[in-house]
Every structure is written in C-alpha cells, then in structure tokens.
Image (cartoon, rainbow over all chains, first blue to last red; front, side, top):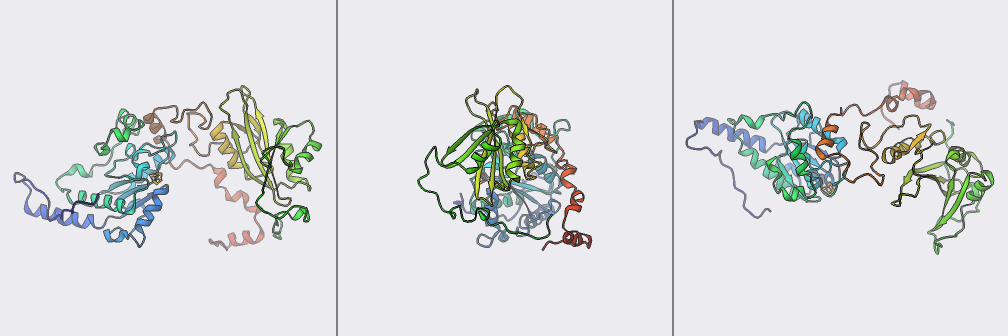
Length: 208
Length: 234
Ligand code: SF4
C-alpha cells in the first residue's frame, strides 16, 4: 500500500469515438477537482475505529490537508459517510436513514473490518458488513486501520471522484430498496456475504 | 428529597470497626469469614435463607424466590444493614441443562462498607419470574430490563418491562440463553429485513420522556431554575 506513485489526474479519460465535446470533459475535470478536494465527511463513529478516525482528523495526521476538515454532523450537508466501527442491527435503520438524508453527490467509506464485514463479531447482534444496508465505495481494511490507511482510502475515493463523468447519469442514482423487504440487494447475496469467512471468499465486495 | 446534602463516608456507620480499605491478602478460597449480614439474614428470615457460600472472601446468600423483595427491602432499610447501592442485577445459566438458572443481585452498603451477593434459583421447567426490586432501588429499572432482554426472566412488579438492548419487536428469543445459537435463529437477510422494517424514531416510550411527571419531586431551586427557562446546569 502506498508503494505506487500516484497518478496525477490531468483530465478525464475520453474515448475518441465519444461524442462528448472538449467543453464537457474540461468541465468534468473542473467539477471533479472541486468535489474531490472538498469532501465533507459525515462521521458515523460507532466503536473503536472512531478513535482512530479522530486521530486522523486531529493535528498530527490532519485530515484538513484533503479538504475534509469540516466534519458535517448533519447528513444534509455531507458528501462522504465514513462508517467507523461496527454497526449493530439496531442501528441498521438509522444508518440507512442517514444515507437517504444525504444529498447527491454522495459516497461512502466503510472503515475497519467490522464495518466492512462484521469483523470478529459474527454474532446475533452485528450487521455483517454495512454494504448489506447501503452501497459502499471504499473499504478500508484493518482493526483498526491506521490513520495512513484511512487516508489511503480517502485518496482512493478522491481518484474515483476525479474519474466521474457528467454524462454518466447512473452515478447519481439513488438506492432504491425493495418496498416490501427494504433490502436493496437480493437476500441470497446478503446470506452469502454474511457466511463465516464470507469476506475472505468474496475478496472484492465492491462488486455488490 | 431532603434539603441538605449529606456526603456518604464509606464505613461511617461502623465507628472504626471495619479496617480501612486495603488490598485483601491471603483470602481463602472457601470458608472465609462471611459478611455479617448473612448471619443477620439467617436470624431475620430463617426459612427463606437456603444457603450461604463464602468464596474468595465474597458472601453469596441463596434466598427463596418469593421473598426476594421483602429481603432486599429489609437489607436496604434496616439501620444495621443499610445496603444503599444496587450495583447489578443479572442472571446465570449453566451449561449443565439440569442446573437451575440463577438470578443475582449485587448489593453494596456504603455506610457499613459491605458487599453482599444475593441469588435465587429458578429451576428449569418453571416460569422464569422473580419479584422486581424496582420499588426499593429505582436504578434497578434498566438492569432488570437488560436481564429480561438477555435471559427472558420476568421481573414481576417492574413498571415498564421491555427489551433494552435489542429492539422491542425482536423475535428470535433471548440471546444469552444457552440454547440460543450465536448467530441468532434467522438467516442474515431475514434479520436485516426485520430490523429495516423498524422505524428508527419509535424507540422511546413516553415513560422515558416525561420529565413533567418528576417535576414535583425536584428541589425548589431546580424547579425555579426550570421555571425561569434556564437551559444550562450548574
Ligand atoms: S475493526 Fe477493530 S477497531 Fe474497528 S470497530 Fe471493529 S473491532 Fe474496533
């Protein structure tokens, strides 16, 4: 991690056959540059990972370098939901509601083993990965991840944001849970990734 | 509510008869000196005290289930006991399925500097119910709710016996019971479906929210502060 030199984005990839004009791609670049460097996090700290998240935000590691110094404790003004810590089932409707209250464009970072997969808490009370409730963009492994780890995840998210295209309307699609069951992915998939070692078997949950 | 505030000095009722606090040494595993309250309980409630154990210097008194409230009230009120602090209410279930479930009360007497553990046995196959001690210790409210939530033990006389840690409509049973599977009874998707159907704002009962009811019990000074619309504390 962190061994590759980061690619400096200078523009938005566009295929020669695309009908998009120079203006829209430049505009994309400008908008993405602005968005990526002013992501306002909504800290959803539920457990020990939140302590590490606080360390990341504090002066030694200084999250402000990434344009994230403004913690948005209201979901209505937030861009990134950072879920730091395990989410018990009782909190599932809460985090779902918070996610739905955040306006587009929005992203989600799942910080730590617990938020990403339930971690060591494979028990009756803990959600086996918040991606079974809301869509997740970046998973940060670790228990807890070091501040550098979280920053690496944030930089990955920034790269993702910088590659977005205005023409791609699907990026801004709201999650639409099934009105009957309130689940947004098929129940069989939830059961599969929640299996013991489900996360190890499904190395890339990002496909959800 | 009394108007003057009396600081409690631990052990003050003993008039120097208890040793100052120090780390106990050479405590025998069994048959140590029992808490004097055990003897007093025997004298007062001879037929209700089933057994007294002293393990590692801590006294456990097994009492009759039906008389728990009476005994706890006496321990709380009697000037020679003054157990003024209820530190825990919980339960124990053993892996041996024939052993009864135990309900445990941890009582502490600050004036006499004593610690007493009360237990009562709930044999398998009988209804899991014990008297609530909420009448004596208001702090038992959430302790008993948690115990009900985790073990399914009903505390008779509790004013508001609902689940505390799990949500109120939780259908899978009582998580700390030995027959409860670690991952719960339902599949993960079913668990998620059930909880997502809950309204996150419907978690509090009106009982928890009525400050108004307690208004008359506040001290005059607090009432005046509230009346004048003051929002901050000290
Ligand atoms: S991943 Fe580890 S540090 Fe983070 S919340 Fe879970 S147990 Fe705590």
